[in-house]
Length: 395
Image (cartoon, rainbow, N blue to C red):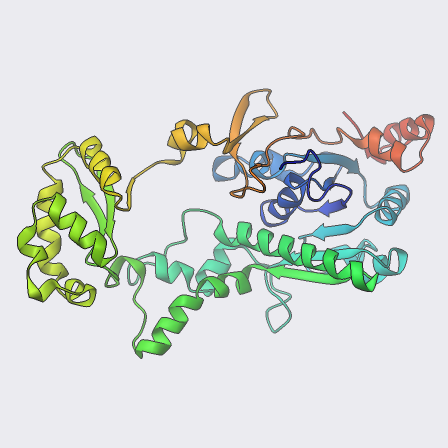
């Protein structure tokens, strides 16, 4: 049974964030129904103006939010923030360590003003020798082992997406939700943190444990021995590439039967998966030659019929027309700052058959300033005075 009420409806979040890590945390909370108020400088979050590889940051992580544009260095702008905090459940920030304290918006000050406030900092590092360093997704990938595992030996390579930023935002959201539940018992808010480096170390856990258990240095992904004999990308007769995996004994039998490889199936030297892995130099050329005679559509259709793991090699732009994403409602409609409409992927979760898409389109800088100030008790004349005086901005 579904309900129109959203899971986090009634929770007010005030965010002082930019780029990806902080906004992705707010996006999770906003998509789930929280009222997320994005506090921006008068000219708007600088992420709005990024180009090249940063052009997708703001549109992807800022739907379902309201924008309040303020001069945070002005006395009246700070007074507005303090009034807003009194009405808030959660505050998130991802600026350099100490920045919020200088503005008077650190946890120690705000928790006295609003004892129930859950204050979340999203940083490069948690407490320790590195905690005051500036952190980026890229630095976390380099020092956290991910770049080493992604590229071949001697060529560390960052992953093809901002995995630490996004996962850091997700872990922050998890901590916030845990704090909300705990507050129901204690009646108090608390300070929670999420960090890029520790997130990357968490991702490396399986490789750390592998090295410990095998007693051998862990090779990067391009040069490691696969866990299964057939678990690779193969080129088809039409010049395309397809990933195919055969990961169980049952799948090995299905694979061999369907592709006429009975001699491999009955070979006692290939009976177990460890044996097949050892025999990869023998098996892979046979499979490569077999798949090279098939077109991409033929191979995809065959694997789907057999129930084998497979995947075409897809580019990001291909996902706009992915039949599964389109049919399952996996893309949310948004309107870009230039008025052009497009779609972005939504959270990969489902609750009671419900997905969470766009309720509020991407906000213009200061789009909700008048609404929020009125909600805080400012009369319309006072609101206009603040806007004319440069304390606030509205569109």
